[in-house]
Image (cartoon, rainbow, N blue to C red; front, side, top):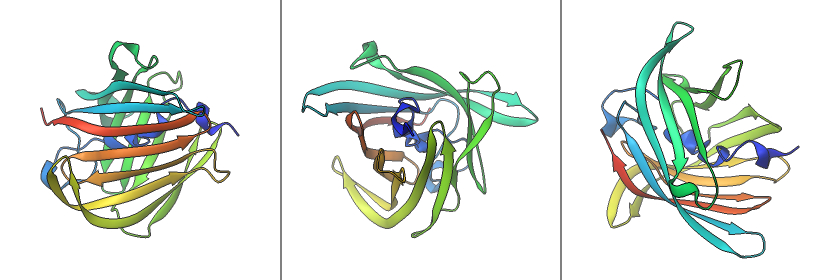
Length: 201
């Protein structure tokens, strides 16, 4: 099973993360998402031989689109200047009371996949089928987090892992802001994301 080849998008199954749609009061919503929102992350890749490369990752929510009778938002993810490597893709994302869902626009069949289950609760677990295998998600804790000098209350710490250990990610999800940081251990090294800026619109 080659979990690590499920495109660089796994780390931001944190992007579990970020890319779920809905547009209620953002201050009260986990995985907030509405047209115009953008997350900018400091992105660091540490290879298995210890080499470190840095970049800047963006995820921006665009226009609403209709598909199969449902409303999605287009979520564009890319790395500035193709550093430390090329990443540029778009998904259609939506959210409802039971969870959030995405369609990778690179998929010719445009198959919808559910990424997460709502509401978030400590101890809650679920599995998702991904290219190459299964990922298991566990909600580890609910906690207040101080990040870049700001206190975020009622955050959830979440772990995503493959059964064989090829992939292990932990991230902190803050209400109204999305994922604050993420660390993913992969077969090709470690990927670290730290939120630099969140633009609501």
